[in-house]
Amino acid sequence: MSLPLQDMLAAGAAECSALVINAVLAIVDERGALAAYLRMDGAFFVSEELAVDKAWTAAGFRTPTTDIQVLFDGAAPEIAEGVLSRRRISLVPGGLPLMDGHRLLGGVGVSGGSADQDIQIAQRMIQAALVA
Image (cartoon, rainbow, N blue to C red; front, top):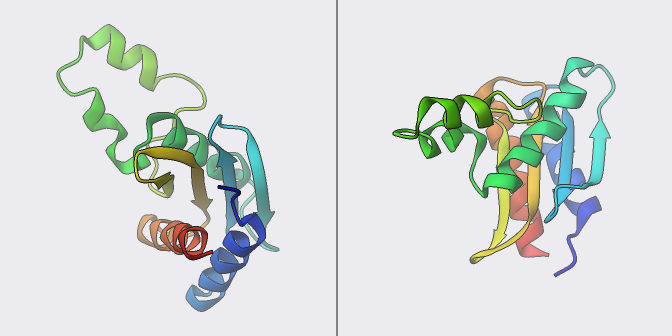
């Protein structure tokens, strides 16, 4: 399945407009490579790297960034700390995996709003991918 990248970015941008926020939207492919990116005018520059890292983390673990910590509950401290302290790993809300059943298609990351807003925008981008 080829991802409808422009549709996904447009859906995310429309959701940002509805929420009256400026954000950065990132989409990575199934291997974590950046596939599409949009920085809205007025978005925080720190959101640029955050959005990409959120998408990369969600795709890499096939799990929303809000749930990554749970994957390491009960793990040896050196394993949990070793993995979770890696530079690109993000536990910040706003990263979602893009799945087709059990098949990973990529990941979406949004940064610029509140945690709930970033998640809402990412969900809208995922919906746009799945209806296309």
